[in-house]
Image 1 (cartoon, rainbow, N blue to C red):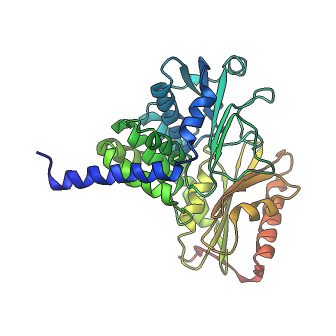
Image 2 (image 1 turned 135 degrees about the horizontal axis):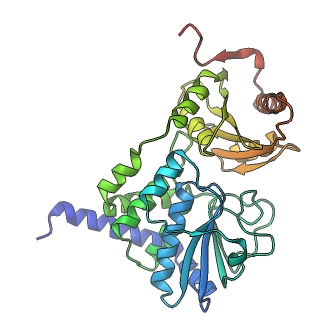
Image 3 (image 1 turned 90 degrees about the vertical axis):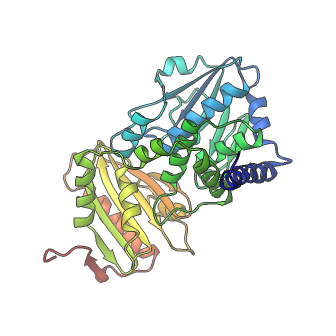
Length: 366
């Protein structure tokens, strides 16, 4: 006999599925996606360089969806470059990624490419210039014109690419196994983490549905993974170097081995009550990485990031979170510091804050 509690859980999932289906009714996004890939015997699913859990989980889910709905097609996942340390690396150890080794020559031999969580004109697009994406699914705002593709689904109002992929399952009533539900759920949670997270209606639908379907033991493992010493060193540097100016906080965490660190620390520092903006920088190889976060309602982090990087580097993002980078040569010890001062000066000027209000987050006497 089904208990009243279980019945209510099933009703919740069913209701979410119906809401997701109604949200796409008349547009038929999932069916259009499948039509774009119909007759393509070899399909590659990929995402941006230095992928985060949202990007990786999106690839895993899309591969499963396409294998279910296009059983005659061969669907592979391949990731360009290292996944990185910290949470991203730990996530990769616990999920069923099974990615093929990236090979730019083999990429050109696929009949179709599905590009997730990134767009062709973005800096971290993995595809060679002479390879066009057949399908593009992303939740970041486009830069300039909408990118070309046989199927393009870009929804900047959605908090996670995983949520968009989830909607395809719901639209066509494709079963989501517990392990996949766990992977999708964590991917969405990670992209919505921090005070800058802004879940949309679809994100909330996905979270509620996937929570009921997920393997709770596996989810616990993903949420509480062990982390390397470098992760904690980055946190310590971020806190010790942090300076706040009225409603803005900036910090530099030095050289990092995982590109996720600036974003994670920017989310963490945004929880400091007086501030509504955080800017975190770090160096990795020949790049100065930036992560910008905000709780402000009247300004967009994505727009502000473009102003910060004008004639310096590349970047963009959402209303509440953004990222970017500046290429550095490393020939001069003061090169990074010069860029950091420029970025800080531009940020304070845009927000009309005086640099004379600077205070250390943690004083030496603490």
